[in-house]
Image (tube, helix red, strand yellow):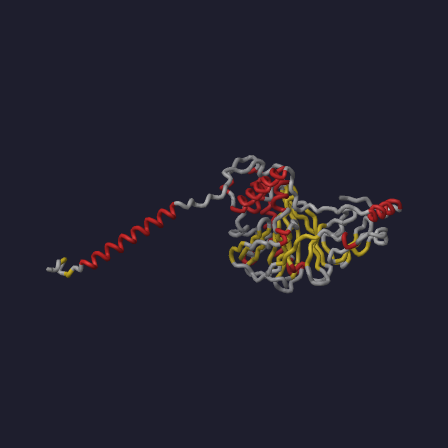
Length: 402
């Protein structure tokens, strides 16, 4: 049989049949995969708010829902290991109205406790900060060690059946990360115990930060603004500085921020170029319309408060005062606006969704869910007897201011 010719090349009929078979198989496989893939529905998009939720800026009920949904059960970066050098060093904090203190134990472990005595809920730590290996309540003299264990309870400890081990301070979950930052969580559920603090979001170049830094200064500023404005901020003073009066241009350039580390929901760590100082800023809402800014200043060198005085300290406080004033001005405009949430940051959307999810749980439960609330145990017969003795002898003459 004469062979067919095509463009001067010999054509093999068996090769043509093989090629046609291969193309047919490939086409069938492609059609099968296309059909299978198209039958899988795409994942549903996460719900997004199109407008600001009702009362976003000023509603006190909304603020209480945020306390239950966010501050009662989120890991919050509140301090740094550098504030606690020796056993007994403690600092009192207030986060969204939840009062607690952090203390370094004799075992070199940092712990956090609600700042309430187990007897009558009077504050145990009365100063903003200090150092004591035993903290005593002045109302009736109950005393606790650095592990929160009850060591003394006048009129109670000798009563048969009274168990001091069941009257420890209410402990708060505390974690220290690799850089020495301290995170707390008021929720003591097993789910919270098994969880870990979220990683911070880093921008720019951060100076070296470790647990072995030195604490040099702290101050607070109050502002008439909603706390959620702060989480919507880009790295603050990233493109400008507010130098103190009399600063030279070279000093101002040395204070230009180098980097930032943000922890959800209310903490930012700022470092400055050319300086050993860095600072931790934490926003604590006092109400829907008032926020407290706390700034803790640290140094990577063996600096003291005197080294932080002058240009550095004045410039930092001026910067943050200016920032609070900016928040107040924006808040005054936004409280009456109808601005859309999709113009806000992802963190703001995350907050809104967390509140919605918590309110949905409360609706199912038919009541408010308060993860941060501590439950007092039922008093035993021995405790009731000792309480009556205590009242009879009027143990403690000071009134409880709580």
